[in-house]
Length: 67
Picture 1 (cartoon, rainbow, N blue to C red):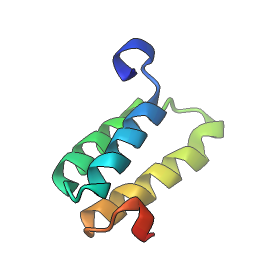
Picture 2: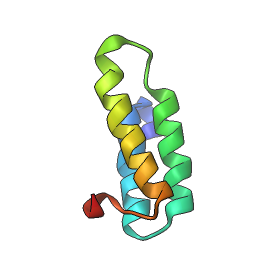
Picture 3: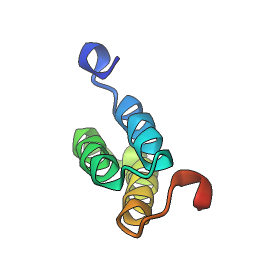
Picture 4: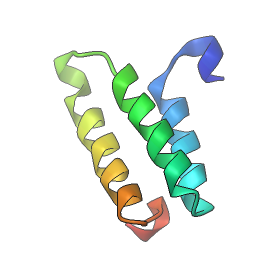
């Protein structure tokens, strides 16, 4: 889906799925890509923070449901 639409939400969802299966290395890789694809506009600041918080959780070995 991401390859067709290039929406960072698709990558974020994929990263969540990897984290849920405890594949944190892959979750981190995908979440970093999601963060990179968010356009630098002011209304995306909240999304950037949210994505960064999840990335930090994955780096600490916590899945989305553990937050």
